[in-house]
Image (cartoon, rainbow, N blue to C red; front, side, top):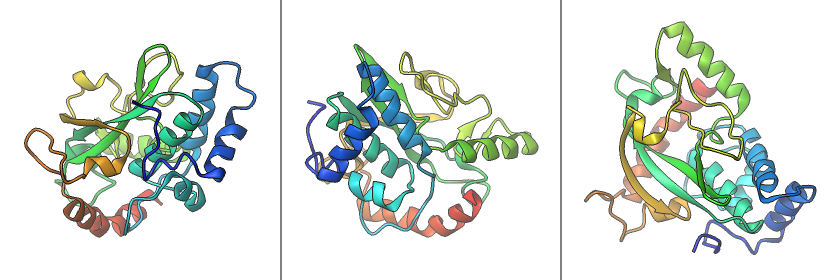
Length: 226
C-alpha cells in the first residue's frame, strides 16, 4: 500500500530513479538507504515560494529548494523508489510554532507533514523539513527572543533522525506535543491532503483557499528565511 506511485511521486521518472540509485548504491542495509535519502533531502534549502501547483518529486530536485510539502514529496518518492515503504501523516500545528517565520502576533495554524518510514516498524520524523543552516539561525533567534518555540521548531527540537527511533522538531513525540492541534490524515502525497473527497475531523482542506493563504505569506516568509 505504501510503495506505489502517485501523480506527485513520479516513481517511473528516470531522473528520480537515477537519483535514488546514486544515493543508495553504497548502502548495506535498508536503514543506511533511508539515512542516505534523508540526509540528501534535509540538505535541500528550506524556501517558501509562490505555488501555482504542487511540484512532483523530480521538479523539487530541479528547483533545488522547497517547503515542507515539497521536501516530503521528494523524501517519500526517493524512499519508495528504493523499495522502502513510506507515507505522510499530516498534523495541524498551532500557529505560535511559526512566529518569527510568519508575520504578525497570531500566525495561522498550519498543516505539517510527518514522514513515516518502515524499517521493521514505522518510524516518524519531521526533521527533514529544515536544512542545518536554517535550524542553527532559527535556534539563535528563538533564544534571543526568550521563546520556547518559533520559526517552525522548538528550542529543544531533535535536530537529526538516526533511523532507529523517532525524531521531532517539537522535541517530544507528537502525542505529547502541546503545539499539536490535531492529526489530519495519513496519505501518500500532499495532493491527497486537499483531495475533494478528503475530510479531516469534519473539516476539508480546500486546495484553492490553502494555496491563496500561503501564497500571500510566501514573500514575507522568504525574507524571514533569508
